[in-house]
Image 1 (cartoon, rainbow, N blue to C red):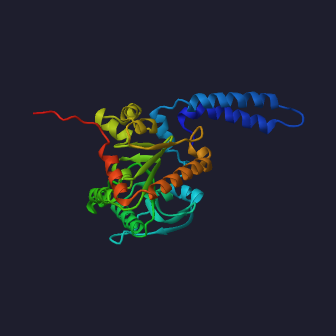
Image 2: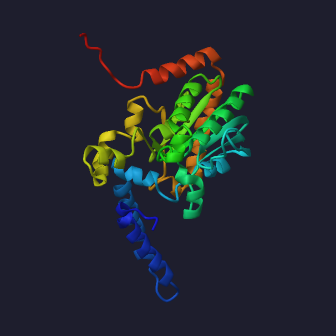
Image 3: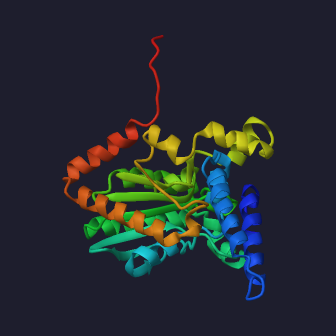
Length: 318
């Protein structure tokens, strides 16, 4: 089932409309009834999607039909050439990277990639990158720096893979090195959270000059389930944790963690992916043109200050 629990009122009306259309014909005309139901559908859709909770937005962010990185690349970019491997261990299919063109701009593009079915999800490790994924990303970003190409990043991961093998190969070190090296990368970086932005797995490719987030995506230091398990000893408290974490775009833009929210159609990006892609493409191109006009020294200083000022703290004298 791809319908979410809170979407049931919308789905039920859509089902009734479909049934009436199937039986409506020359002898029986249900056009007036269909029109009334369509009006009711619009009203109900507005009520259901117009005031979503943080937990409901997370459910939409995880929707199996939601566009993934390769979908956005196909919709907004051309001449994509994927690059493979970290030159140390192997290729990680959970995090893809390569050359592409967006509009008139040549770029390096990368992002987490989930699967559409069980087989592909196993291959892509559900979008949870290994250390070799983050090392591949950094290797490709150095190419961007060498050839003076902007970097475009799509973030969509529950988190970096926490398995034994990943830890043995230096998961934490790989992410830490990316944070360090992206901070000093001498080329513009634009990142967009398109679905899930989970913890260090997201931040490992998320140090950017300009950070966007889709309306129903989230960006958080920990998943709501993980937070609930720690604080309440029960993952069933995830909805409460989601509210407390302040992880949606509306919260994040107030905190200065993201710079722009890209609107989505009612119900999520999967209802009209091309419209979302067009809006995102326009914003990315605008920022590429803006950032390319900033000197390298100023670009690095502004990037440093952007992340340095996140968070609030007070000094207390001993």
